Structure formats: structure tokens, C-alpha cells
Length: 302
Image 1 (cartoon, rainbow, N blue to C red):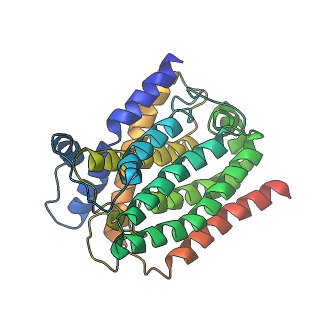
Image 2 (image 1 turned 60 degrees about the vertical axis):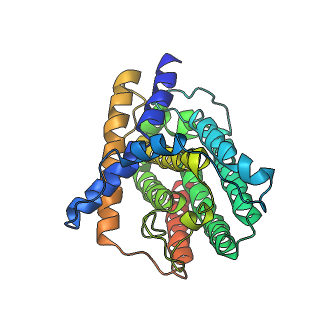
């Protein structure tokens, strides 16, 4: 339990660093100066010191959404065995709870964006839920592949010691699931090529347009929840690619920290070599990612 709590504290502290690693990698590869590595930490500190201005058209939902978004991400973090052995809270079917805790955060954020009465934010909300319907299918196919490979219905089995023993016999399916999870990571966290967190152009914005009316501590909670969500998906990808179930829990946390930096660099590389997809192409890529994981499921069932 001590190592599980240490893992939760690790991801909570490192979460704002991951977007900075991706941004610095992209800046270096594209020949730009780019933002500082710790930029998000500075932004969060600045936003928490500011006041909040609310539109007279918004209701309690607009004020509640940032809190629910941050709390749902923290609760989801408690379900992942970050130390490679056990989560703070684990049970059969916790992967479903994890998925819908994050879906709850998305749901309230969409409601908050609609609460402003802005057609601009409504456009972003529409795109968000449309692409999420494809992303969740791909994510579930990857989870099914891991569940069949490890004969487990919980994260502790899918990402723990059973995964270590499953790799020799189910490597192709696990690799397909890992590739799908990385695509899901990019889509769920609004990264290139699905979205561009650095743009404010009307035709290209999805997630960013939904939070334009938030400010101060509310915006800080949203930014932190987004960074934590990125870190959680990165942790899952690392746990699949580098199973740590046989390692000492604290050594496993060290591997996790190194892996998070590697994933941040990988995201930066992807963003520096790819442009943002046209909106009509996004569902096609997500369906292809889901189909890849489905092939992994078929290999395990044959």
C-alpha cells in the first residue's frame, strides 16, 4: 500500500512536467526556442493566484465542472497499479470504472461548455463527444486483448505479474494493444494529430475551445486534470510495454518515472513529424486503431 500511495504522489507531481517534455522535444526538433520545461507549473501557480469572473448566463454546472474533472482524474489514478503490483483501490472490473470516471469528467466539461450559450464552445463540445465515441471503442478493444492475455478483469492483473508471464505467448496481441493505447492516449489528451493544444483557430480547435470561458483557479484545475489524464494513459502504455510486476515496487516506480519521460519525448516526436489531421480523417484513424486491437483479440481467441 505504501508503494501504491507513493506511485499516486509521483504521478500527481510529475503530471504537469509531461506536457513540458513533449513541448520541449517538439521545439528542439523543429528548431524553435519553445516554452520552458516547467511552463505548466508556472501557469498553474499564476492561475491559482487569480480571481474568477463568471458570465451571468452560466449556472452552477459551469462552476462545478472543473472540480468534478479534477476529482474524477484523481479517483481514476487510484485504480491503476502504478507500482506494478497493486492499486490503492482494485477489484474485478475496475477498468470499466476507470473508463467511466474519465468519461464523467468529459461529460461535465461538455455540459459546462454548453452552459455558456456559446455556439463556438458548442462546436468544440460536439467534436469532443463525437470523437470520444470512437476512442472508447478502441480503448475497450485494447482492454479486452489484455484481459484475454492475462485472464484477468482488473488493472492489477492486466498490468501486473500476469502480464509478465503472458508476454512470451501473447506478444503480437499485446504489441497491438500497446499501439492502440498510444493512439488512444493522443486522442484522449487532445494531442497532435487529433487536436493541437497550442492553437486557437476556430477550424482546428476541439478541447481548447471548450474551456475558453474558464479562468483563474477553474482553468488551473482543468489544465491540471488534462495533464494528469495524459500521465495516466502514459502509465498504462508503459505498464503494457514494460511490465513491472516482478520488480521491487519502488524500483518499478523508478522505471515508471523514466518511462513517463520517454512517452513525453515520443509525443513530442509525433507532434514534430505530423500535422493535425483533417476532422474527417480522425474517426478513420480511431477506427483503424480499434481494428488493430480487435485483431489482437482474434489472435487470442483462435
